[in-house]
Image (cartoon, rainbow, N blue to C red; front, side, top):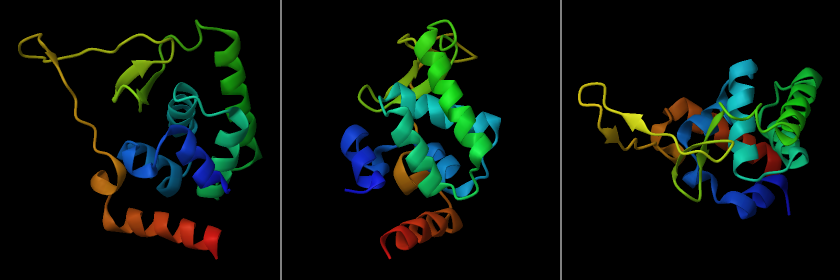
Length: 145
């Protein structure tokens, strides 16, 4: 079983993941913000450090040794300190909502009424442009060639 199938088996198929995760994973150059967002998503959904590293290496060829060290450091920090993860948000695939890594629920309020609103996140390829979808499929073609 390859890394794609392994991670999908653990947390669900790619088409159930938020589109921004797919975009950051496959289509964008990693930077500190995107790397932290990806780490929070995988950490929060229970993907191990080693699997996260393997997946990012397979999907984001531009990732480098510094990225891998930063990912290991991020996971280690969150493992050791609940305080360090208290303000980090991620999309929980089981609950289908944004959560804090410390387990807290995030409420989004209407700026006009102050009433909680539900945010609909685009999933899978729905929120991606054609060139981004092409880039993702090319990664899969190379992987399975």
